[in-house]
Amino acid sequence: MNWIELMGHSGSLLSSITFMPQVYKVWQTKRTQDLSLSMMLIVFSSTIVWIIYGVGLMLWPVIICNSIICLLSLMLIYFKLSFEKKNG
Image 1 (tube, rainbow, N blue to C red):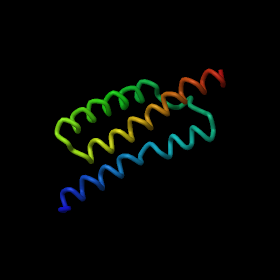
Image 2: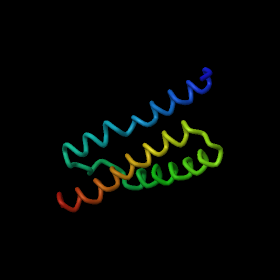
Image 3: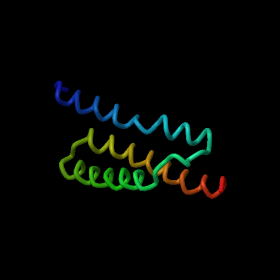
Image 4: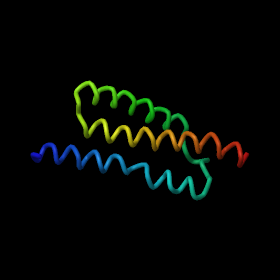
């Protein structure tokens, strides 16, 4: 693996973990009032586009990173919709 690939995988890892603290905090507290549903929907949509791009060019760092972010953004969307119903 050359240094360019290493940078791609490192960037992929760092980008993938950006949503993890937020998902964990929302899961613990069940509070989503400060989360923007529109922002999460935009993030979800953009990750789908990036996954398609990554698959088309077989760019594994792009595919892996955006698949993880897609899953995490889906979790936040689910939490936003379900916890706000419960918390009224």
